[in-house]
Amino acid sequence: MADEQARREQAVTDEVVASFAETKDERLREVVQSLTRHLHAFAREVRLTQEEWEAGIGFLTRVGHITDDRRQEFILLSDVLGLSMLTVGINAPASAAATESTVFGPFFVENAPQVQLGGDIAHGAKGRPCWVSGTVTSTDGAPIAGARIEVWEADEDGLYDVQYEGDRTAGRGWLAAGPDGEYRFWSVLPSSYGIPDDGPVGDLLAATSRGSMRPAHLHFKVDAPGYRTLITHIFVAGDEHLDRDAVFGVKESLVVDFVEHGPGTAPDGKEMAGPWSSVQFDIVLEGSA
Ligand code: BEZ
Ligand code: FE
Image (tube, rainbow, N blue to C red; front, side, top):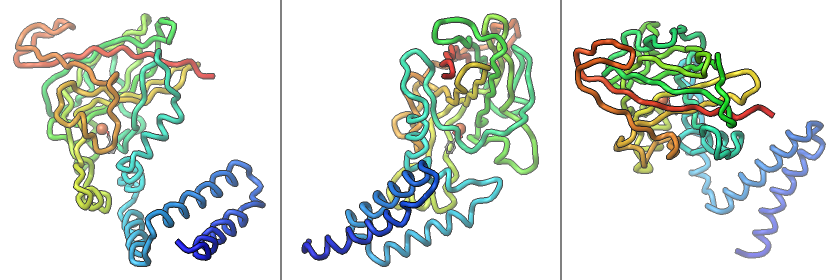
């Protein structure tokens, strides 16, 4: 590229970066100046055409129009671009001792019902019964009695309760870990499912020959005073979508065996007339700084 062209392009970037120089909030200044530099570098790298700029604006406008209080297409966009997972990684620094984090997703609901230890979070969600148990401990192995464990999942049709008409609550709940940090509850075996693909994000996935599937998983959010909140999932080992999660959420340490059982007696003494599954997952929380 001619030197004169490069000089003029750099002058635009420099002018915009300098326009933010008086920003009082230091962090805001750092973020907007860096954003400007990276956005301009992107446009220069791909030699962005006027038509492509218009298509980009049209795309973001559609993302905005489809977003409401039940659907967050901007978060979905961040998810499929891997920005959500990158942000999770940056903010939950790697620790070999603690349970790994992954994406939150859009289907968490505040005020889910409490269940007692050994209770059932399915509340009528369809699927094979699944017994989930484990412990919550700190990185030095001490049990965290009373840790608040929120769980939520899709049913066997791959849908969360909030994706159905009406306001039924199913496949979600919270429980408090027992005195030895132990927890146990009934749920249903999670199923793989497609993220919402009937909007602009779905169009992007289709245009780039990417799939919209997520491997089967059960979401956890675990809180206890003095510890970092853990947001994670456990994934079902053997799921065919584990190596191409649409939102890049899979981490090897979170892939767990869900054991299949025939009719018989479950760990809580319940007589099971049909097939059921069980999974054991120990949760380790990092102390908050
Ligand atoms: C979820 O796991 O619930 C989810 C995460 C990201 C995008 C869509 C769904
Ligand atoms: Fe999910």
